[in-house]
Image (cartoon, rainbow, N blue to C red; front, side, top):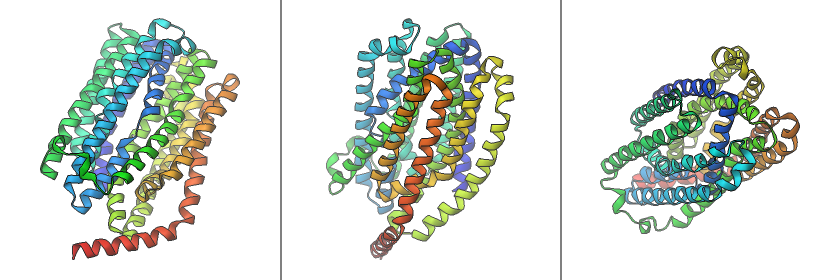
Length: 439
């Protein structure tokens, strides 16, 4: 597994470097106010999409890994078709909602109302992006991580080239938005074409010829997972995007720019964390499907320390270097972003230490517990930021993000510890069924 993590992680280092170059160019040319306006333009469509989003990526990966391990290609292809359909419908609805409401929302969060139509333009990228979650799940279950990595790296290179090129050409904030939309379109189309080819080879036909009826016997379970995932995604979206909109309502747009810079620096680190999740979760799901309890927990213990320990050390070094790094790369005008960056780096540390918990919960099928943790986190971020941001600004918002991560960790760890015995018995039952099926 470490080999696949290394391949995907190293491949995502290139996009991180490119994103850093893109961020530096955009921040220096647009200045704090333009950079803050860009954050608000992206935050509102992302919030709308998150409210509607069914979060199909992890649910699709879960059931695809299950069907693949059981040798059920018809069900795997049927799930692919359903997941693509859900994502495209949700993305289309999000574009319509943003187009209808951007004119009402923009006056409350944007100083320059001429930029309001860019919210709708940015939302258009949801359509090609809607193809990515299921396509990524197909490639992950098929262990095609080098292919995923090459497509992501190529799309990131093109996206950065277009964004930086448009900004240098003087197109300003609109240039950034157009570059992002075009880059995301290329990624969505390329990864979907690759996933279709891989699925045909692995499961012997196209998902275009599959039907919802092929999921008979599992449809209610799958539908329940999608609903719970949708609610969890809603909470995650509130956590990730509402803070920027609240700051935009209460604080100057330049301060939103400082906050967005600190947040973007930590977001790039999460890309590497996502590589671990993309590789590990299909394997954890297979272990749970076959009832291999000892291997599951051996994997969790081993790779938690192999990845979390060095990752924590690296993040600690970044916390020490964040002020001179921001002044050197972005300029002294962006120094106020440093406190936010440090607080959010602590959140990255907590995520590294608890990364495996969410994957085990999803494999077990206990999304209600995750939903409870995320819902409470969304309340903490929203209410806390509304109450504290008018006075304390970005530092308050970052503190609320850190607090919700801590609360979520306490809830999930406590529940897992109290119910571990029950799931050990379930794993033994699954192992017996799997052994009987092989014999």
